[in-house]
Image (tube, rainbow, N blue to C red; front, side):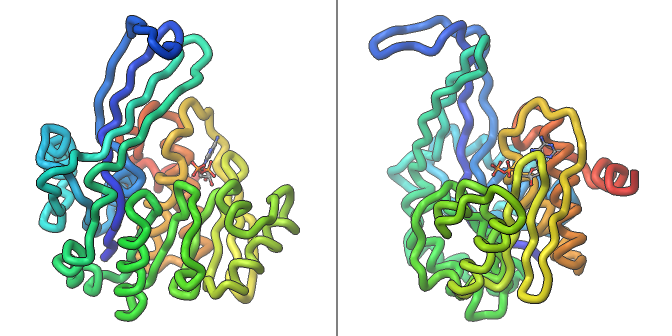
Amino acid sequence: KITVFGSFAVDLMARTPHLPVPGETVKGSMFKMGPGGKGFNQCVAAKKAGANVTMITKLGRDTFANVALDTMTALDIPKDHIMFSEDVSTATALIMVDETTSQNEIVVTLGACETISKEDIEKVKNEIIESDYLLVQLEVNIDAVENVVKIAHENGVKVILNTAPARPIDEALFSMIDIITPNEVEAEILTGVHISDETKAQEACNIFFEKGVKNVVITLGSRGVFVATPDESKFIPAFKVNAIDTTGAGDAFNGGFCTALAEGKSIWEAAKFGNALAALSVTRLGTTTSMPTREEIDVLIKE
Ligand code: ADP
């Protein structure tokens, strides 16, 4: 069983002929609202890939919370471990996209996702302890991340930390991580190594090992992933697809990777599974809506 601990946010996206300058009001050409947030995206990716997965997140008491709850009902994701803030709103991402250049401007307000307290975690502790894997990102208050990682580690639950979005983390956390999954930018921020080739990727992994991380998976966009265990390192290439929207590619990879691990697959096989899930997701617009089914993933892997 997998528990995802992380963010849920409502994505509010408007396309416009041009991005407004300060003080300007522009007429948008299209508006779309939908579920998002790194934690939730990863949970949906895992669920659609066939995982037994639970989501722990915190919502406000507002209309946006219903977007989370309705999506969870539709996808049959258990809602028993959702926490609520009485006074802070559900996280939102206000996204403006220039329809000609595709450039965007985004304001993420984490709201309730940033107010996860020790008492909140105490209430969901059993759910974490009963899991095989804890999949966690950095899109909620950092003390909550540190708290759940500690609980998982002390109770023999394997911890996968996706270090997105990039932000500093307490060095003490590293030795509790079974697998860290940064992208190239996050790996560089955390290790100081610019990943220009496989030698550099290994160098970054060695720094993570020195910090106490057990295994490292660096995602390299359209190239694939670099996987390093203490005994062996391998580059696992991405699937070649026609990418049209790479938003949420990292989330897709992490959801798939963790699903395969929870099924008992090796880290190498799991990386391939994550690559397949992510490759399919980038061929479609959107984040949660672009996550493929298990059947689609299996077909791509067999090809
Ligand atoms: P993030 O979205 O966090 O920046 P990456 O860009 O590294 O993460 O992408 C994560 C994974 O998604 C990659 O390791 C790869 O498996 C897959 N991926 C991303 N872009 C493409 C692409 N253009 N074609 C195929 N797979 C892709």
